[in-house]
Length: 118
Image 1: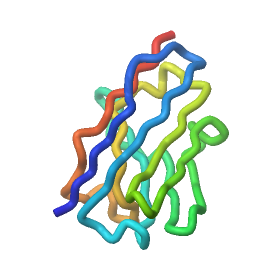
Image 2: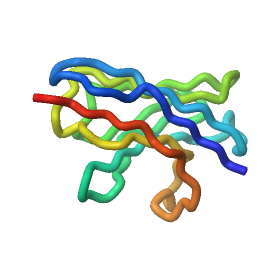
Image 3: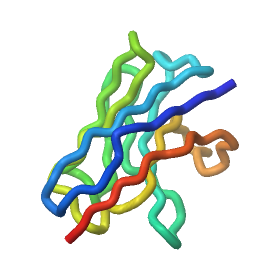
Image 4: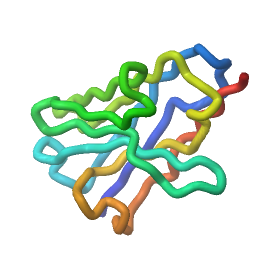
């Protein structure tokens, strides 16, 4: 069974930083491309960025240069370092594996709330 446990969210002022973590089990983590996603109130879940099994990353244009994804294949964890946070980054953040069909994934963790005040 897939288990995804996100943590590290909170309330931060604009310009501040947060580091999110995700513990993953139930998938072959070390072979999986992983992604961070977010869902703001009233909006659809969107992809924030991805990291391949060898550490190559890609980011949405809205977070490029501010967010950094990393992973620890020995610990089955993936992290999201968020700097220069903006109010529009406010959302619930989720991690999951990533593929072209990610929007149809049936399993998601509880997510972690990030709130950025202006």
